[in-house]
Image (tube, rainbow, N blue to C red; front, side, top):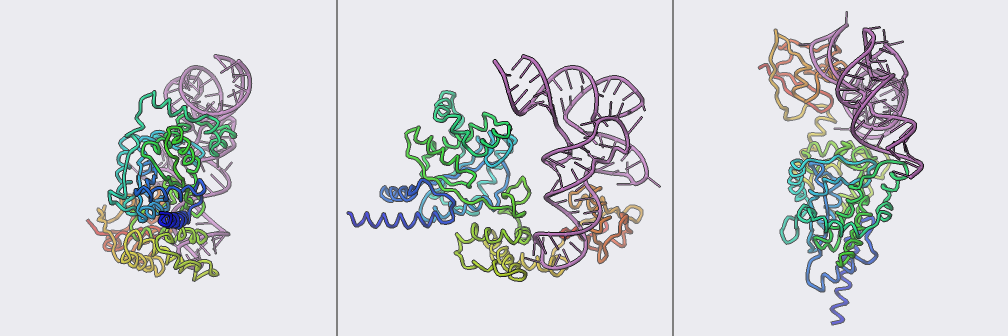
Length: 413
RNA sequence: GGCGGGGUUCCGGAGCGGUCAAACGGGCGCGGCUGUAAACCGCGUGGCUCUGCCUUCGCAGGUUCGAAUCCUGCCCCCGCCA
């Protein structure tokens, strides 16, 4: 048997280093390897946990970094336990934030949870043997006695060690008991589902580690933890997040996804590729974005945009998105397909602010400003300041362009 | 429970009886330049039936010809003391 064991040990070592690639932390040292080894000895898959709070309705590329890593675990034969934090979403995790989150209503949480699960399947393997989806309301809606036991596992001092809590303490900001409770609840999730490994962003490190303490307090084996880098948003500076409006959603349309990617600062390109694409497709395109300025940087970004769309949609749609982009933003031509808007003529005139407001969901005042600033084109010509009402004949059949990317073909109704 | 400080437009943050839809910075939008990158320049950034009107400065009242600015009550946040 020693030989077989050696082989297993070697395989576990190899796999653990492969799985840990791209991670910021994989703790404790050798922990993952141990888990892999015991799993293979016991002939069972590891239970790899990720908790997501359904606070925003859509999954974006930031989530995709961690989900992609989970997929690697699945591909290695392990089982992902995705926890929809429908209960913890009511608490609001302050990790990485300087203020409290607002609480969501149950209806919102439910709706978000449903879309979340659906979208996560774009990246995860949905095979029931490889994926288990749970909601933490299943076990967190507990009797007071159980909560007291949970709370008894940890001290305030332990919790206040967490960086953002410490900062807020120091700067005199409030910290609610609810927020302090959050890491405990998350840790209890690990107990409830017998997590072998838990993943998260680097901002989750504290919570993930605390999960180990809580498991220990409940007499369970402690999970290994792995943290993944936080992806920056399209502004290239801050963490990608819906509330900062710098996100690329994994269900964004191909055109949108391509366009948003092209707007990402050059400096962030390499990171997008490294975190999102390399793990899945290898490092074939590496290195080119460093090549001087200008053309090659642009081409590298085009390739990135194409690859992202190909991954989350399809190669065909990636090609189409690029064609659309070239046509509209490089050649400044009209898109191939333009939605129509019919307008009612009032005494032979069309009131454009009203039309624009209705078509694009902006206020009339904003529409007026756009016109006055030369941001609106009707047919070939940009409208002049104050040109708010135009003759119907001039509008009928023409394309109205608002800003760089909003188009409507007008029809007299 | 006591004393003190504070709640302003997306964010930070001025304003402290009229000239305030509210300085300034950030963000964002539009235009220029361009690679829908960066940097840089200009304009804009509550709403509307738009040379004016309406709503907004924690909430509710009040004083005044007139309040974000003064008064009263309430709610919330922060600090010190207990």
